[in-house]
Length: 321
View 1: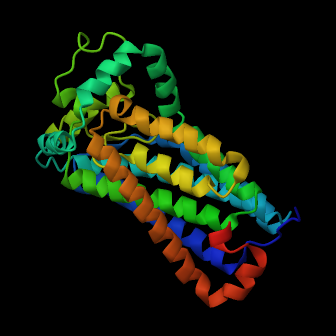
View 2: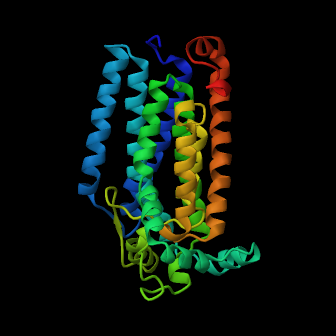
């Protein structure tokens, strides 16, 4: 595969858009202590921000000095994923502190209306603990999958699709954070009053998030943290959304297509129990994923139109990537 020496104006514009969204979220997080009782745990930001700086410097080197657009894209988009994850988590904390009425009863009723029984799924997981352990490991693989996806898209030369994937991640996270603030929920485990006696063979991955969630709502927890932040979003499920985004983004790569499909279908199966999600949370996450991928693709198309000829000469058509 011949090297690509320049990323072109379309990809630069998309990179600037992604960085602008990250900067906007960071500005909100940094301003929070001024207007609220929150404070920033600066130490938790040291590792991700150091990684972002190093990746960005290397990306500049391989863009301006060594002229390897694939490597530069992989490095820069990895930096974007790390940076947004670092500021997106505290943004979800700020939104949760709005303390709007919990909607678990609504989501449980919707599940019941669809004939879906969360407690029956928990009983099955308890009956087959080995299966749950496998699913729990897959559930925890999301961060690794997301960074690996960046590298796979970069080194197969799908540089436009890479930007669409990264932009989709940012949009999906922002949408789920916003909706979770308007329609907050504590999640299926606490709503159904599950205890150790109900689940003798497994503990959900998100069990450590509940004290933080309740603390954000009652005002007793006011620390904005990056590394070690808890996932507190229930509806829609961001885990489910990102699983679907990974499948869509990597589908054009034949060698990965069925691997990622199998892996992330398993992640979707693990999400109700390990993520303490109602089934409707997962369904909504899937809708968010498809909608945000379509929106990101549309944005890329609009950005590309003024320079279609130069971009098409460098990167295969997005639909065919």
